[in-house]
Image (cartoon, rainbow, N blue to C red):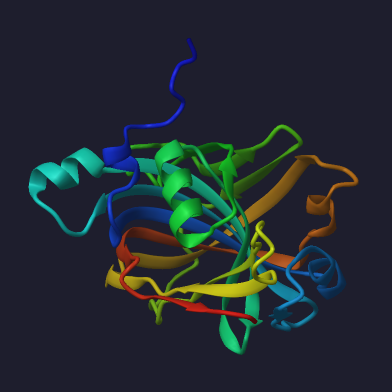
Length: 253
């Protein structure tokens, strides 16, 4: 008999929207436009920075619960995950936002509803996060790592901020989806899923210096996304957002 690899349905299929609360750090840098064009959806029109495409590697440490329901229902469907996301600034179907092209997480519940409900390209990865930005009781330098079977990414951050920042409007999260109809009654279709997160509490926003490095992955797609110029790190501490109350699908992009 095989062990059931999935969580209980009551927690997996809690209805959106969800409240996500926690802390994130983001390494912003530019990558070569030709490399991005080779890797992403042909519907994506990348933004142009100083020398390349504005790109981010973001690490999240998140607690989540459904927004609606009784306290017992919320507690039953609540959870926690860590996530790493590579995204590019640009537009699809003339909608500006960020295309989250690669996403890794360490929680099967989040991976399931992220893929099934929003179409996000989530896969399992090892996410290691430690340091004062995420844990005020820690004395060590903040560091985040993504470890996959083929490569790993490492971000070290100077805990002392360079400056405090003001939080602006939330960015659209863009997910192109290729829809197939196996019975042949309809032609294949390309859609755009747009998730517009609502900011409930912006938290504390600041800029830091940091260093991004990579181990392994030589000759793979990740090796083509090397930073051009400096890496700028943003931290967003103790924020809270609502995800799922504003979602739009544009069909046939």
